[in-house]
Amino acid sequence: MNLAFVESPVQLLNVLEWAHARTGAPPTLPGVPAQPAGRAGTDRAGTGRTASPGAGTSWAPTELTVVVLSPTDPMSRGQLRRMAELARDEGYTVRWQEARGGTGAPLKTLRELGPMLHRAERIVIGDPFSRYVQLLLTLVRSKDLTVVDDGTATMEFVAQLARGEKLVRWHRRGRRGPRELVLAPVTFLARRRLTPSRTRKVEVFTSMPVEPPPGVTVTANRFAWTRSRFGPPRITRGADLVGTSLVETGVVDPDQYVEAVGALARTHGATRYFAHRRESTEKLHRLAVETGLEIVRPDLPLELIARRGPIGGTVLSFPSTVVHTLPLALAGTGIKVAVCDIAPEWLRDSASPRAQGFLAGVTGTARDVHRLPAPA
Image 1 (cartoon, one colour):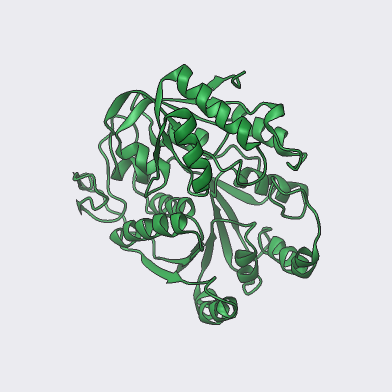
Image 2 (cartoon, rainbow, N blue to C red):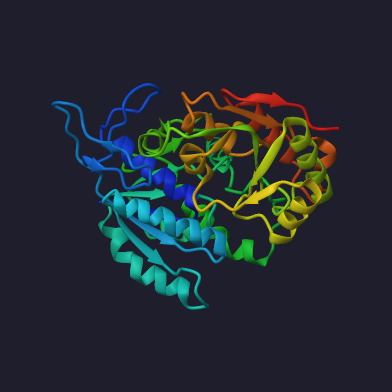
């Protein structure tokens, strides 16, 4: 049995992509008819299309149980419930775990998930930086591990693993408070679990450009499941703008961000702003008032929203995961993805010293995107 732990909608989407890739189903390429992930019949993802395997083709779905370690914020929970429906429609088992529902929830979760961890042959995780996931990893020993994308954080994870560094999110300044000191042994042991050994294989399933350390297998995520289940999209005139949580994570100054969004919208004729699930209500209200953009709160990850459509002929973004994933999800549609650089003066004084270099790397390594200078 494969056992996956996810804490965000994007992680669950990429678990579905990983499971689809393991079925042996042929990849969906532009101009090639879509094939199902596990069984023939009517697509249940809302596209209304029917797909069936080609003559003489057969494959079995991956045996997979997905455990949703439910977050607390309403937007993430809503998107996760929608993604859980899609996972169940694919024939996978989904367990919703209220892992943060009070002071006793973590211990209760560990007790309930312990037997499942011991039975699993492979553990699939979406966020190796998560303290919760790191704690779960301390309960396993010789289990094969797969890390699926949790956005651009995958790039930093692989780089830190290759350099033998401790696991720290790129936007953190690395201060060691009391909580970090208490959890340091957990992080250390989790990092050992994420290192390949004679009895443990480690795989990274990613759409990001990474240079893995010796022994780590990298499998390309080409969003074949997304293309087979959604679209092709209806394309509208003008442009759409993708939001980012760089303000909420303390990296970018809010005033600079609002000004940049307004300048991009005016220059490229954008009319809609697809909000990131972590963006605050106050910031989104300010964007609507000061830029005139229609604020859209997606109920699914943007890769699925864009593939389902309608979507603008140009999609504008700041450095983020979507500059790597959208060109794959929208391959063959003719939609242009453009990325706007983050100017150094936009960064807050409290931003991590690594922030500018990391964001530049996200933009510089993106394929099949158009580069835009930061608005003056």
